[in-house]
Image 1 (cartoon, one colour):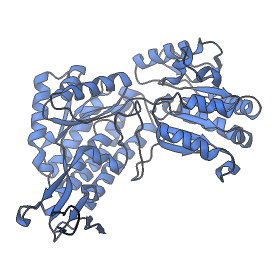
Image 2 (image 1 turned 120 degrees about the vertical axis):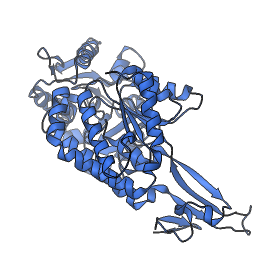
Image 3 (image 1 turned 135 degrees about the vertical axis):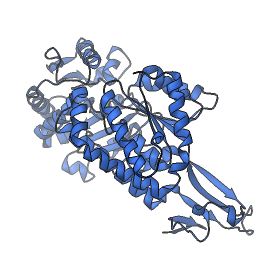
Image 4 (image 1 turned 30 degrees about the vertical axis):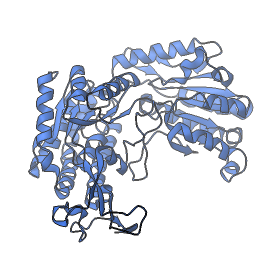
Length: 488
C-alpha cells in the first residue's frame, strides 16, 4: 500500500523521537550485530521472497545477503573502535599567533536519514543495505523508501531489523519504511529529515537532489545516479593476452544480466591486429551467454529500445546483437564503433550514455590521441579501468600517462581487472564525479559513515560540561589526536 503524506510524517516523527536510543555506541554496535544475525536466521525466507520479486536467483541472492550481513558487522566493529568520531583536542597555547584557546572537536549524528532503495540490490542497497547500516552506525535513525520492484522483500527485511532493535531496547521506529513515488518526494521534503542516500537512475536521483536543495533548509543528498565505467586496453595488452581480456570483458559486462552499476559500458580497444583477436574472443564468449531476465518489464523495454537506437547509428556494428530474447528475457550482445565517431559531439553521443542491461560498446581506436579525445568527453564515473601489458605495468610505455587521464574520471581506478564486484573494505570508495554521484563520499566501506555526521567544536568549555568523548581522561578510551599527536 502506498504511503500518504500523513504516513510519511508519522514515520519520520517516530524515527526522530527514537534518536536518543542510538546515543550509546555499545547499544548501536550490538544492534547492528543482532540485525546481521536476524537476517542470517531468515536467509531462506529472504532469498525465496527476493527471487520471486526480482528473478535474481541463486547464487546471486544468498551471496548478496551474506555481503549485507558482513557489512552490518563491519560497521559494528567501526562503532566499537570509535575512530569515526574523529576526536581532536588542542589545549590552550598563548604563544601561538593568534593564541589558541581550548578547542575540542568531534562528530555528531545529523538526525533522521532518508534511504532510497535500489532495484538491482534488494539487500545490499535496499532496506538493510549500506546506507541504512552506515546511518545507524552514525547514530541516525532511518526511514527507507522501498523500491516498487521488491516490496515484500523490503517489508520482511524491515521487520527483521526491527526485531533486532527490540532485542536491545531500541524503539522499532529507528527503521521506518514507506512505499510509493509520492512518499519518496514527501520524505526528502520533510523538515525533520536531515540527509538522504539514494541509488538509482540519473533522472530520479537528480529530481530528488533538486528537491533536497530547494527545501527552506537544504540537506545533504548522497545520490548514486549512473555510470559508464570506461575501460582502456592498450595495444601491448591486446597483443599479450587478447583471449583473456575478451573473455574477462564478456564475464564482467553480462554478470547479473548486466544489471550492476559498475558494469563496463565503454571499452576502448585498438583497431586491427591483436584488437581484432580480442573482439573475436569477446564475440565467442558473449555468444555463449544464455538469455536472462531483467528486473522488470519497464527495464526490459528500455533495454530493447536503447540497444536498437544505438545499433542504428552510422558505422555501428553488432558482432553479437543485444536485444529481446524470449517473451520475458533479453539477449546479451555488444556494439562496435570507430573511436573517431566518439571524439566529437554528435549523434554518437548516445553511445556515451549508460544502457542498463547486458551490453557494452567497443570503440576501436587507431591512435592514442583518439583515446585521449574520447576520454576527454566522458562524464564522471564510479570506475575506470586500464589494461596494460606486463612490461607497461613495470613502468614502460604510456601506462602512467593513461592512468593519469583516467583518474579524474572515477572514484575507483583499476589496473588489469574488472570493475564488477565491490569489496566491502575500509579502503573502498564507491562513488565518483557527477553524474556517478552527487557528492564526493562513498556508499561502500567504513568511511560511508561520514555522510551522516557533522563536526562540532567546543571552545573553552568547563570540563564537567564536556561530552565524555572530549574529556581529558578519555573515559571511553577513544582514539584521538591531542595537541597534534595521535593517541590510540
